Length: 381
Image 1: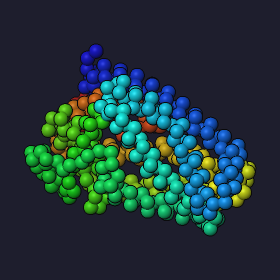
Image 2: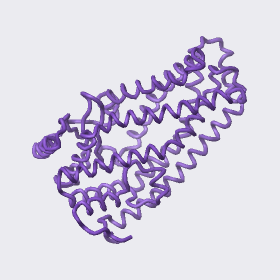
Image 3: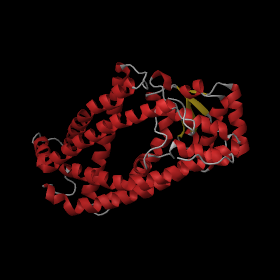
Image 4: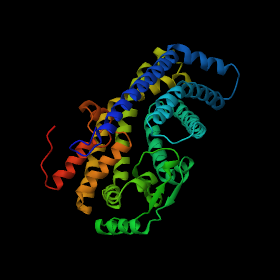
């Protein structure tokens, strides 16, 4: 196999399609198992678990915490085989992961601990809101969710991300100077470029804007710095500058807030109307939480495609910004081809896959946009 007309390695793309098929099988199987688990809970098992925990005579918050810990642990345990087979093992099999099994397991434990703490705190707060504000609980939960999102967005780069990867300021003086010159040319305040030590765990490459306010920074992986030319890295950094120029982090929070408002309102309406059918005693009964989670998940799935479409619009705008600032469409197209081949990402997905799954424009579209910017004719096919 060789290279296709858009610059993608045909062998790597064939491997990417095989990876997608295998990963999709694990994903659908995992989703089915979780739905069965929720179904079992809703068929009065959740009520029985609540009654069993109540028999110990613990205070309300302790009983609720025990209930949440038990359900979260069981749900996580059901997902661990899929996380290993459909995540770690599959990534190792396709040459993407460089992480040891021990390191992967430690990351899983850290994720479990963080998730468990979040579920216990959020669950207790939600149960209190349900019991105390039966008419406005969902509105208060939504507002608190936005506040938590902002706090985590601010603290994430300095507290959470370093739990899994090492970060250091970009040391390459030439590349840093190019980035600072780009930022000055674009009229964007430089907030710092940090290198993420991804190579200890993966061969994937990426770049992103992380954080808000004083913690906001551009992050690029060491895997990208080692495998890409300075011109290619420059176009990727310019793309991230575009996100800063258009305030995409702030706009993203606002759009996410609107979508979550709709999600909470619809899920609350459905839950309030149906919770007695699950054998749940009252709106604030902990046994009803699985039903509320199910409704929220259904509504979020329905709202997912419009949110992804908005994300693809923002990413395409950042691509255009990169092309206009760097005036180097050839390097941009080359970077896109390298990035997707290296990460085993599908360059040309089916339309339904793009609609349901893609937060970025497919890679072939991004290369075509660069060709159009350069005045080249579209490639048929």
